Each structure stands twice: as structure tokens, then as C-alpha cells.
Image 1 (cartoon, rainbow, N blue to C red):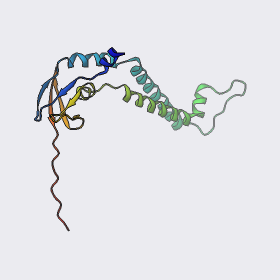
Image 2 (image 1 turned 90 degrees about the vertical axis):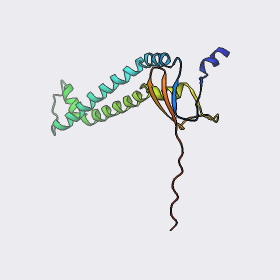
Image 3 (image 1 turned 120 degrees about the horizontal axis):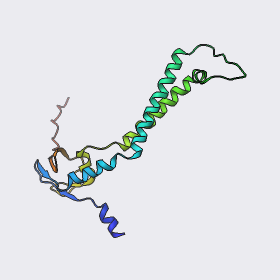
Image 4 (image 1 turned 30 degrees about the vertical axis):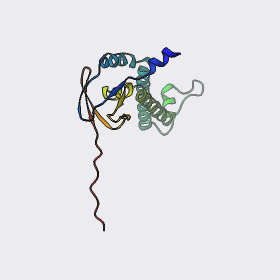
Length: 163
């Protein structure tokens, strides 16, 4: 159990109080592994679902536009596929929109993140006073293992005149 906990521990990065460039050894290798593993089968399934949703939704909208007021068919043969599409055009439109919505939700879950966000998720950023730096720093990726990290200062707002 102990080795598993060591794997989950995020390394600490202690920040200076002033803006500066930081070299984080091993970041580019870790980020490239993340990018390789990030494009899973679920990600491609979400894109396929998005395509199906768009096609079904457009088919439904097209059938709504060109649909006749009556659909006639022989009782012995039943309606054709195109007649079913015309009869259930609104249902197809809603189904296409629902599939598209589900796929965009899945895509947002499986989307890859930029290096700045990955740094904040994979490492513990600690300010000079020993607190977590979440939301207190501005991070800019410079390439390789180098980042420019600037502390965000909270400037006091000017006093408002009393009326």
C-alpha cells in the first residue's frame, strides 16, 4: 500500500516572492506521457458520437423542411425508410441534438489541458509564505521545462467618496 501512496504524491514547487522563470525538471517528459495517454478510445468515441448527432439532427431538420402535409403508403408494404424519416422528423431532430449535447459533454471531459493547467494539477505550487498558490499566481509556459510564474498581487481598490 505504501508504494501506491508515493505514486500519488505530487511534488512541491516552492516559489519565490517575486516574478521569475522556473525550470521544473522532468515536466516535458511527464507532459508528453500525459498527451500520449490522453487520446483514449473514449475520446474518439465522443467525436464519432458528435458526428452521428450532427448527421441525425441535420436529417431531421431537412425532413421537417421538405415534409409533405400527408404521408401515403400501401398497407401491404408499409412505409419506406424515407417516409418514416418524414413522419418522425421532430424526433430525429431532438435525438440528433441530444447526441450532440452528450458528445460535447464527453469531449470536455476527455479534452487535453494546456501545460499551465497541467502544471497546477501535477505539482503543488507553494508560495514564499508556505501557503498553496492556487489562484495566487499567473503561469506562462515558455517551452521545455521552463515556466514564467508571477504572483498575483491584490491591489487595494481606491476608496469611494462618501455621499
